Image (cartoon, rainbow, N blue to C red; front, side):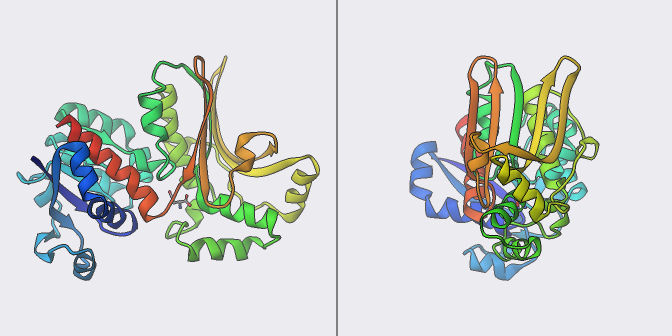
Length: 321
Ligand code: HSE
């Protein structure tokens, strides 16, 4: 069997989740790919975390060039978080012909064109399924199974924290602060939840969706956005009285004047499939001129759901190798 050599940048929630899945489902992954997978390097300072996952701390490095210049690395899994530092490592890895997999929506959205071009120059694969909707396989479907379509609209509930807060406020009568504290305790929220509640995280994801659906790159800072911090119980009641539910929607639509896009809370009629997407669940609803309407639904955060998409990308690359 071919041995595929992996380097993990970061073994936190998502990187660690992906590694756990490689161990947990080792036999079926080997059977499906005809490959074995070996972690040869990690960029992770926390040696206790390596031991906890059963990895030898000897493979840890602190200098990322020992990963992007290494001869014994085929696929780099970037799960550090942040923007400039991980983007730089991904660019160098791709240019050096190493395949890259990442769940890092902020780094992908801020550098989409550069990363895509670097993959072309290095003849390497750049895959980021986990960056939008966690475990939901929407990006691969948009690029492959739905590739025959001209897309006319994409609407996503792509932030679990805000969907959790809005659901708890609307269905349980919780205050905004109570619901946010609970989302943080459950681990859905970003380290700084401002990114969730102000719609920044959703704008990153919308930027990626627009690149794939419409072939246009809009930097996330240029996407008009409004978060959920101003939503009151009165708004929730008003939505209810008009048979609607308030959802934070990352949406883009093709119009005669070009693609219109924004992240904002919207009243969604209860008859619409997105209205039934509750708690931390995410959904991506796309309309194509051949397939019509399609909705992808599932868990948008968490170690194993997001790790599932990361490992799916690793497997796709392994099959091509
Ligand atoms: N903070 C994000 C969310 C995590 O709440 O959806 C997944 O990107």
